[in-house]
Image (cartoon, rainbow, N blue to C red; front, side, top):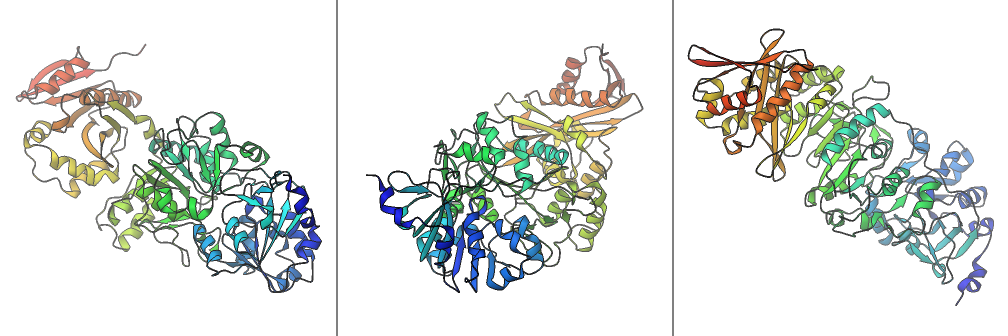
Length: 620
């Protein structure tokens, strides 16, 4: 049966439909790029509507009325999120911001905590059964419709028909307003591509093939996606789909095949993008658009194994508190569901979360890693929930770390110009020891070339990278895990105490050119443990002394040989001609390694110790 005849009496103009709105009404408007622009303009034009409250999750069209005194006299705007077009109005006190998790909004409607009298929304054309789609704006809109007394829908043939929870029958709509117009486009604000590419490089290190991703609202997280192009079989469970996802779908990088929950479906609540994204999701069974109280709750999120949440921040303080909705008392965005996704990731088997942010403001004059959050700044994510924080200067891992360790981790990834002042502030706040040595004050991006990976004979994989100040605890734990004999063979005498000052002195003297240590890290459950170290230190302009120590349970894996080759690459880059090593006669294993890799080495004896001089092979 064709239902079109049954609902023809519901078809009216926008002026007629909005005239049904009573004074004092609480009106919900469909969200983001799915908002019904034509209906909004008709409602505002109708001067008979007075003293109305407008509720909206992501608002754009209303931005053009924020300097209209007549509009502000007639409408009170209540927003769950402050979008860029509404920021000026928020700063000027012209709107009312409601801090809440988006996933809680449907229950506010359901429980009548926020009562809704009327809804303005946009739908796709109904099919022959009278079923339309909320398209790119399912999020909290569906529950508003269910609890409103008056439902007015703009029927737009340009609205995609999406699969999931967003289907609505015309019987549940009071007035239908046919009007074709292009949906709003979410024009991504430009980001510093150099910064984004560097941040993406670190993020890629953390993401494994087969992971399921959430990418938080913000220009930077979406800018990272185009650089995550060397992964396979990624899945999506997120709140918003944007244009940035589409190339990864087209290349097969995102295919959702390895998801254990809602396999083969990319799960989201809404879409903000351009026509190319809208056309891609139109009637595309790969996508499931659900309500925010389903998609964005930790219990549902955590059902995805290997779930990775990537979200942005405006500031992160030295204890790990994250501010993402305001700068001081000025609201820039909203609470969203960042904490829900971060907690869901923490509950996921193999999951974790990443906070990404540039190290400084756009003008470079202000650090985004701060000693303490600005006065009035809201804490969007608690310090206890934060795992990884990534800037263009590296990765800070905070989960399970003390405040002292967090200070070192976060200062290490701050912009070099601000590291000294951050350390000073941390000392004043008694977060760190008063005698803490300063961190390197330069951009260490060149250390990325010093990283490698080595597959061990026992089936495990070893990540190799330079020793950093944040490795102090791991370094000391490594030392105390070694047997007395191993320590004696490495240091030529017994050492029973490896103090904090000794560890600091090691990395404080490193310049990563004339003096560098490489460490080998192997995953043990959810943690990576330091189990090997190789070091070279300059003797003169052409020769450097080299030494190694490997934890006993990893002997015989070829680790020292790999570290030796990696150190030679670095030493060659820095102009050295060869290595020198002093070895105790009883350390035959190390002697064998040196002779294996340097068959033309010169061996001599000095005061009972064996000295091996190992010239590097000439490069053609």
